[in-house]
Image (cartoon, rainbow, N blue to C red; front, side):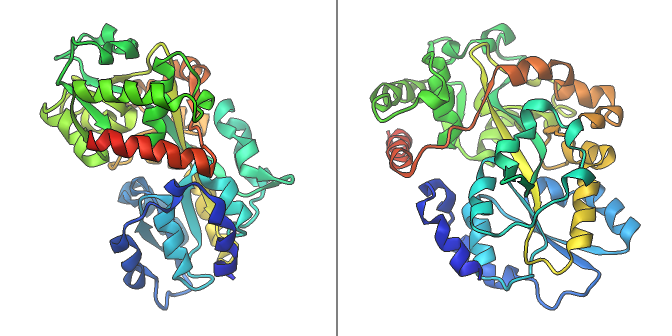
Length: 364
């Protein structure tokens, strides 16, 4: 059943299947085996593996939550493909991927009247993504921005509000670049005075030149761990593509690490929570979703030891401390959301062209 459903994803852009052979191979040992009735199996991002988040739910319901951390929707789909129907109960996934996973028939309908939709920050509700034909299949649980992180002891914070500064000679050799082509090329578009949705095959040559100029100014290009490590250790003083997720968890050790949404705008990332249609524990899975979306669950998720991000439920503000809200820029969210753009998801042809440009950028 899952195999036939996943065939519907053949037209998805290549980015959804950028999982390594090792990641696919490990699925055989990662699949849950003979789980007891009082256990719940969840495919999650690393922020859900914090015991501070999970233990209160386990203790309240007398259950064990088995968490499988993954990176990239392609890896998750490989895990699902090699699992049996009902092996997985809860799914945390990139907000922009929800429609295609719904189209594949993998998600159960959620009872909208039992979830705090009205408390979710307006632009983050994304009902065009989480609903289909009037039915709700996922709920946004956390969001943030791919913008600019920096060490304010090493750079002028005022400079960080203008993306063009990163292309000047002022900080040449002091910039780390987050290695994810979608938000980075979106930011390049903003620097050029375009919206991400304006990206076309015709704009790519000019964007390619901008990327090469950025590369000349950069100290390194790296994925999440290496790029944030570069900022934390001083290998770089600026991280383009960073945000609260890159520095908030480190600020207690280094309060000079900070982030800002540039005047040109930012790129909004979001993650969602869903229940698998084939789950044999629908009621328990729904209780897990309700817990994560509660003010307490949201506050714990927002400040997870893996990475921080804004809780989708605005009522979490009553639980977060003033210091936590300050790190998340709580009071600036209205302006940030108004000046942000969702990830631009190109069609398969344009996606391939963008990946070609990014690959050339990495090799340049």
